[in-house]
Image (tube, rainbow, N blue to C red; front, top):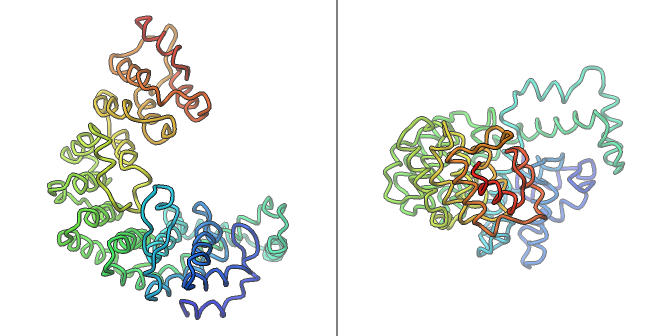
Length: 403
């Protein structure tokens, strides 16, 4: 199977679709990824990351596009700078286009739904005796009949997309592996994350254990802490217990190792996560290169892990107070909301009686001006689940009542 731009002509894109309709425009965008002008390249990246794959959802154009992209990784023109959603939203400098393309392939790997068995996907993709109906639904989709997405057989078509992605995943591995030795740190970091995602795709790697060994050796040799973080996060994602990195000289590496699910019962790992959350502002500043496994600020992953591991809210109270003092309404779903749920696993009863830890956390929230915004509907959900009212004065009155 050919890869790179040579594969574009071998595909009938008019028989495929992306998030916004028939993929007839995709070949031109794929070719524009290596255009000399910046504007067509930027539009091509937008198309790739917003249409060919859209918020994690793959489409029938995604598998052949992934083969084209993988083949472009070795093209010298992909070393030119580009700005993807991560760098644009965070105000970071543009990264090499090669890093952006690797990020796309990481999303492709995740879209294979590795947690779902092949048999389950095939059962949805190939319901017995319904091929003619599926063909009719596909024709309606290619005719851009929006009502066709409501047809139950559209699920069969989308399941076939996942199977097609799984089929091409092994072909993506070698081009990504080659990027592990790229001279650019951003490219190496994205390659590490994408390779870990590919390793989770059933059948993508012939010997997954060899990859774990290679990543561990690389982590011990990497001089830059950002690269070591990417490597130990990949090890954790692959089920390894990177215990040896809990003593790394850089706190970011220690905490990224501590996030590994295999270390959930390790006292040193638990301590690293909680200690980092004692100063969430500092923790958020540790990484200059965003690993694939970390969405947004590092503290979000730390909070999720701390809450998952905690046997009681009292265990996470001190870091919870630190987070409550610096957060805002915009991040309720990622930091102080989950901590509120941990503090109030059951709705407050009537008459309300708060534990000491609940009182202290609610006091910290009340003291922070930035979390009280009546326009933020998400916060209402967290307060409702806790049996509380998302209103600063009401919470202050509750605390003043001696509850």
